[in-house]
Length: 303
Image 1 (tube, rainbow, N blue to C red):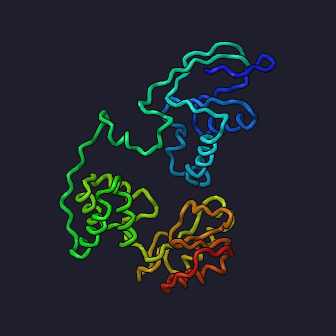
Image 2 (tube, rainbow, N blue to C red; image 1 turned 120 degrees about the vertical axis):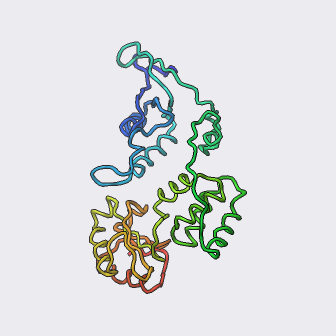
Image 3 (tube, rainbow, N blue to C red; image 1 turned 45 degrees about the vertical axis):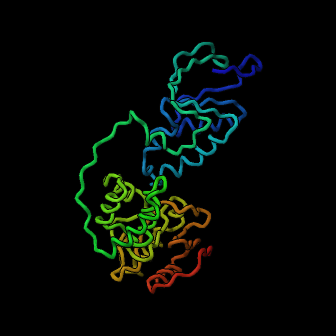
């Protein structure tokens, strides 16, 4: 470890071993007290097991909503140095003044130039590749094929075309028929399993038909404790559908989401780009009927 300035026989630096959520918070607390911190983890990135979780107990908040602010703060903090792919080999000295020997495995990239674009991973010659399962040629109606083909043509020659293609197709069709996903796979060369995985990962996408308008009721911690569950019940009663269902006329889909990034407006609801904040149960019927009637008014209603 690099040497730090000694004061009263003590070294002004600390080593936190393990970059999980606990280690991240410990590093921030120490650095906040003016101590130089080395955050070491044996993996290629910090985050630990929590980064692999979808939701956390008991609030069901998404793990990244909890971790993201800490990741950003650690990355920007001048007194925190991250040591990834690092293993503690030896500790010598006494409490308050000790030396730690750490071995770091090579990353084979220049970390000072890395932007996290993923190009090195996509082109890694030693990466294990699984032979994709053969998917029969997609059969979709001619008019739909032309529409999707035009979207693919606009993006096919750009780098990383899949996400822009899926976003535009989703905007045009409002969901992904299986035949369309197969056609995208066939035309872009991406394995169908890869295309399907992305189409089912993001909440903005859907592989089942949904309404023209999707009413997203935030069920995150802040909105939940301020009554979003009652809002959801009132929306369901007014629209005569249950959460995750769509009205028979395919106009409105009711959906519960974990976070829409508007905690200051809790309880909040988002419909497309429109945000309705600080809602009361009395206001729900008006909003539901507004979209059930095919109208879309305003961008933000802070209540």
